[in-house]
Image 1: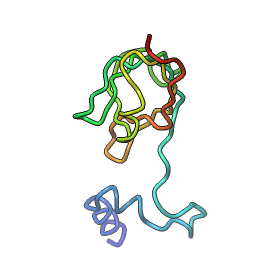
Image 2: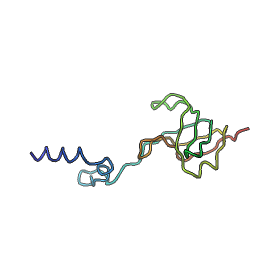
Image 3: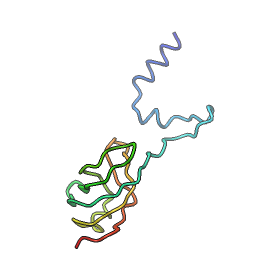
Length: 112
């Protein structure tokens, strides 16, 4: 009976509540874990200020995804630092909302 109650409680808790549980008694750190990031290189196809995002044609990320063009959310400050045609490098991952993001965006070659 106790096992069923625990299972029921876990099934109705929002994911954020589960992530915030203290696991220190089990040898795991408390709190949410940092998102897994992967190095990305590519070219900015479009700066999408209204969506706070960049459309990037990126190279293959071995073991993660093939080369393609896709939209990534970025921090607001990045929008003023990059422009269409810039070659960039960044760290790609997913945010808390499971949306693709870029962090640590750096222009490696400015658009001509």
